[in-house]
Amino acid sequence: MVETVIVPLIMIVIVLVAVLVTVMYIVLLERKVQAWVQVRLGPMRVGPHGILQPLADVLKLFVKEDITPARADKWVFTAAPIIVLVPALIAFAVIPFGRDLTLFGMTIPGRIADVNVGLLYIISVASIGIYGIILGGWSSNSKYPLLASLRSSAQLISYEIAVTMTLVTVIMLAGTLSLVGIVGAQLSKGWWFGFMQPVAFFIYFIGGLAETNRAPFDLPEAEQELVAGFHTEYSGMRFAFYFLAEYANMIVVSSVATTLFLGGWLAPFPSVPWLSFLGLVPGWAWFMLKTFGFLYVFLWVRATLPRYRYDQLMRLGWKWLIPLAILNVVVTGLLKVLV
Amino acid sequence: MVEAAAFYILAALILGFGALVITARSTVHSVLFLVADFLCVAALYVTLQAEFLAVIQVMVYAGGIVVLYLFVVMLVNLKRPPEAHSDPRRLGRLGVVMAAAVLAELVAIFAVGWAKPAGGEGALSPKNVEQIGRALYTDYLIPFELASILLLVAMIGAIILAKREL
Amino acid sequence: MITTTHYMMLSAALFTLGVVGVLTRRNIIIVFMSIELMLNAVNINLIAFSYYLQSAIGQVFAVFIIVVAAAEAAVGLGIILSFYRNKETVNIDEMSLLRW
Image (cartoon, rainbow over all chains, first blue to last red; front, side, top):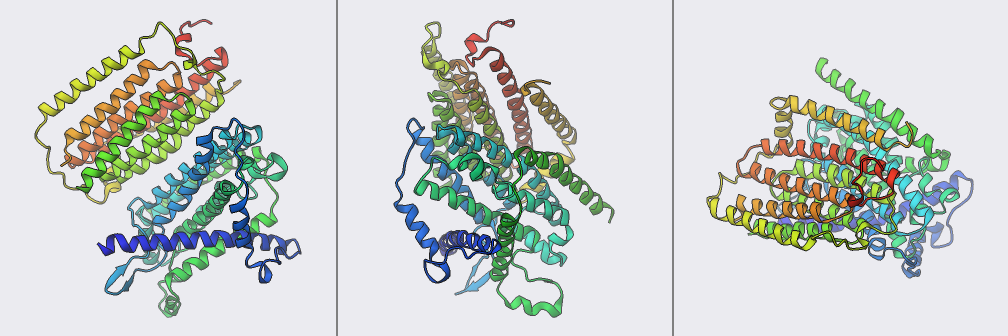
């Protein structure tokens, strides 16, 4: 009873709190990194070097007035931010954070749940998140949000195909859909899949940028083009949900990339015996390090690259990434059979 | 006990959302109730230990087909939906009564004729995905290939039908 | 104890809801969505039998039904869109003349 109910509940609370705190500080980190790239300082006032800025942001969003546009569909308008946030958070249920620990005579697993279709679960949950964007734009009953939401959802659906194809190659290498099994396969093969499948890693990274509406694929949210995109009419806590959901999606994409391509909670070179002192660092520390590295690259790319135009974006997704991903699947299959 | 509670709750949700789909006034609300219905059906599949089908249901049905419906509903942006005025030629209420009678008949047939529970309700092997994959690629390879050709044809057809000019 | 009979009754009820939707509503998009409800009812039946008879064949068949439903939805919605562009209506009572 304790093992099957209480331990997962405690882990869920820990993971949710960790994700929300990380989201808040990623927002601050993004502003700081962009500032340093642009040779300025970023938020410096609230707390030493702006460390407490996220608290100020949260407080501001809490007390802001919640406006609903006239003739907006009330129920859908309220439900859309929830529909975006919930999939972003429940995707963390299957990600393995670390080794299984043994405390107080109980085995505490390194993940909340080990579903044997874990990878498909994350993909399916991501496709539910698209509804929040479509409905947010439509229910605002206003031109710019509707256009932006249709563009954004078309972009998400297009890049979802390329991303799913890259995940197919990882499944072919690992032989299982369960994320715990994929990390175990990387341990037994001795190589992170990022080294065995560099093309897939590259396509997943680009697809991940597009899936989370991040620069250089952030036309649907660009300030210069569409006011603020599909969340123009949202204010206060509802806007905070959209904001949270976007950064939580970023963390999900980074965590999945870490698990699939960078070895999850494994230390570097896991099967080389004389480097096994690296295993003294706990698994979840390696996981966090790799995820933060991936997130930092997201922020770095945003500060560096210019934005893609919408037709260039769609052309990239459909005419370059999907054929490349399918070719990758074919080549991986051939190599598996012949080698 | 837990399985029974799960079944009854999910069955009530599925039928409730289904009824809301066919009776909602606004088309977008109908589509949203359909999504909720499909998610409940996926939960039902999980209780039947068909996890692969459950995620396929969410990914393809709820996350693909219904998104397509939502796009079409938004493109066909009607000011006055067809049901805004009532058509005297239609006998809607009579239809509902007859459907209820058919349903009662079906339920009576099931309840009387199939009183014995079928085989053991043991679990399918936990390697659900492997079993389905094996079956698809060995015994049912030809239907699998035909299904992929069907999808290709449907894709081409949908693009041609929906294009503004060829 | 939940037996196959329970699942068959649920499936029959959902199928009946789909049939009522097809026969009663005038908006053709709602008619298509009711058809999806009917296909789901059939899927529930198949998966329940696959569980109780311990065979994966029911699930394989359900996968094929989902594939067919996807193809049908795509082509059907394409037809609806073309029709709407020509006649500006989605009322099936007005879709009765093949010419104009």
